[in-house]
Length: 187
Image (cartoon, rainbow, N blue to C red; front, side, top):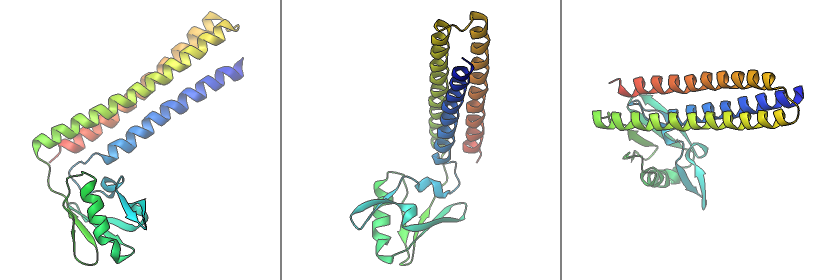
């Protein structure tokens, strides 16, 4: 019986950790005014007929807070990289100097900052939904264990432990959102 209980707790913690991990990755992709190589993470470049992530065909770095520099490993990729960035819908206008692709990241307007904060809030809410789904799954498993002989007192204690774990993860989601919102709204 203890093995089943441990399994439920481990699976629940893993699911909640995945929700937080996904939220962290989503928050990194949301622009906060400064140039960041992760802004181009989803860009796919046609490379010998196959869509390939930009990071696998070039070096992407940020020489300053408003510039992203992309140094392709093969010069003939420059036009493909420019086309891929334009098609990605990121709102960037890439330029090339014959050696590399340069993106000038424009400063955010107040309205765009509010939109990005709303986007971050939505990602935070999605993560909370994932955490709550993990809690529901764990509670259902505990009910099944209750039917298989787990005492009601023990089940109630375990449910309280799972609720505490859920509250802790919800607090982590809120903290990540608050940090990102502050980052976005800082001019």
